[in-house]
Image (cartoon, rainbow, N blue to C red):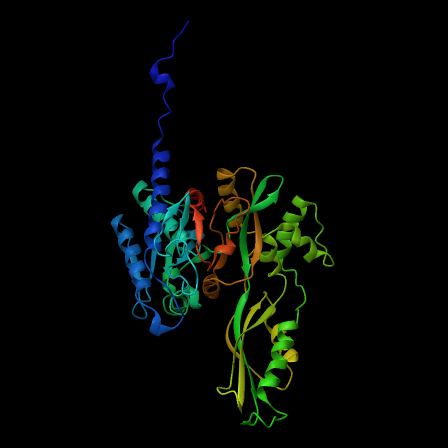
Length: 455
């Protein structure tokens, strides 16, 4: 008869790598919280934007310097700073991978928050705060990964460019867009980029999870409709009242449904979910069958067609005066390759009674749904969530990837987050009481470390 010694019953001693990964997870959470506590609200109006982005950028720069990583802080306007750093890889000839996150967040005014938006409080395992999902969680995570690589002497497979950007929430004019136009040298030899919006888990079926990878994203554009006529007294209606003519055009835009276009990313999504759910996803039944996917449906449905949404109306200033002019602003989301078709169709919809003028126009991005990087993402998810599947999809919004696309950099949206099956991560963007499970940030740190180390 043998007797086990107390030593035999002890918990196995963690390896040095396991200890380092534990530190990485803890730091990803801590840095995310520290960034959330910096009020870096981007109102989109220069006069009302403070120095929050620069304060966040200085924190990032100093934390990188603390572990010996040299980073460049670029501030094209006071308060609008970005930070870029490069870590050399073992195979620089393979091109660099950009990991980027924006440091600005949207406003919180007009929303009712149960927890303070810049408190970064943790309650029952959930981290609350503006930026918890969009997207200081990834900024904190990639910052923690960069520090982890430096501490542990890890050399990634390829060059990594870490970019922490200003102004994404207002189009990236003073952030990613400005850097691409004025400092493309910071992204020399980059071929791929990794950022929002994707990587979060959704129910796939049979108890398995899918992790959505945005291989494409809609373009975003703005346009203005203007109707003009004779000003006059409200008691004497005129046949060319610009308010009436503009209203007809706006109603026509609001009622119009553009045709379904099945892009490569949409088809890749439908194949994966169709196989898992036993759905055919034929054009005739597509939208009805998408409804069976729960909250995922609204995300994918918005990626099926071009959309034009009236958002701002302006006319007159006094009830008894017919104005000489009325305007409407339109938010446009356009699928890859559909720019000219959308312009022509919108012109036809609004008719000749109003003037149509185009504002900013950023075309859609489209990366390869079978790219080698997707296999790296799948490998990282396999290690953390065996049996899960990375599924391409088309993001119906736009990110800073649209700017990097102008440098020939293929952009992918993948912030790995394992969340409860009923939790709609995309629904947290810009919402009150924005929140994320602490465990999801820890999962993100482990998976992102593997992705950036092996990509």
